[in-house]
Amino acid sequence: MSLSISLKFRNAVVGTAAVIVLISILVYLSSGYNLYLETYRTWLGLKPTSSVSDYRAAGVDAQLYWLDKMCNNGACLHRLDWRCGFALSTHNPDDEFDPEVDEFGGKVRACFMVLVARAPLAETLGKLRLICGRQFMAFAGELYSKPKDCVDAGGQWGKKLKVFPDEDTYISQSR
Image 1 (spheres, helix red, strand yellow):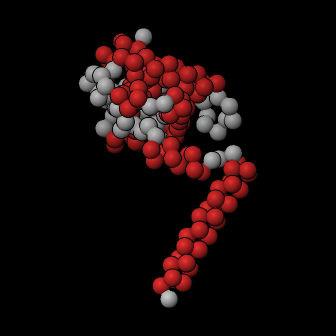
Image 2 (cartoon, one colour):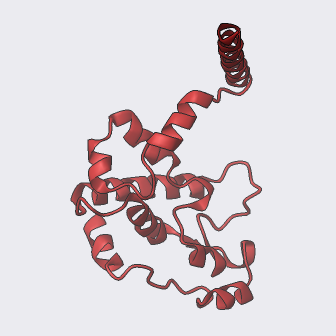
Image 3 (cartoon, helix red, strand yellow):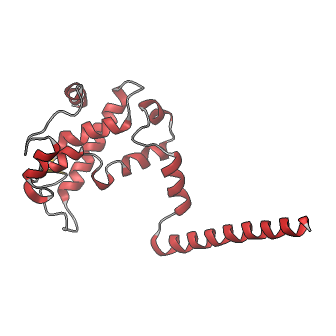
C-alpha cells in the first residue's frame, strides 16, 4: 500500500516539474525570457544589498547582469528625487526611444564601474548605484510628480538634497 502511495506522489512531482519545464520553454520561445535563468539571477545574483566585495567576487556574467539591470524601473534615483521633479530624462516617458535615457544609463554604468573599483569592500551596490544615478539625473519638472508631492515627502521642489553624508566624496572619486 505505501509503495503505491509513494509512486503516486513521485509521479505527481515529476508531472508537475514537466509542466513547469513545458511552460518555461513556451515562454522562452514566445518572448525570449528564460524563466530559470532569470529566477536564479534574481534570487542568487547580485542585489542592491550586496557589497562591493560580493561584486568583485562575482563572475563576469553576474557583474554584467547587474550593470544591465541596476537602473530598471528608475532604481538609480532615490524616491525623493522622483517626487521632487527629477528623472532619467526631460522627455515624455511614453516616447519609444529616448537618447537621454540611453546616455544616462551609460554614464551611470561608467560611474559605477569607477566607484566599485575604489569603494570600501563593505559598501553596498545600492548606495553606489544611487550616488551615480543622482549625479546624472535631469530635472523634468511636473512630468512625474507635482511640487506638493515633493513637499509632502520632505524635499524642496527642483533642489537636489543630499541622501548620503559621504555622497560628495564618492562623486569626486568618480570623475
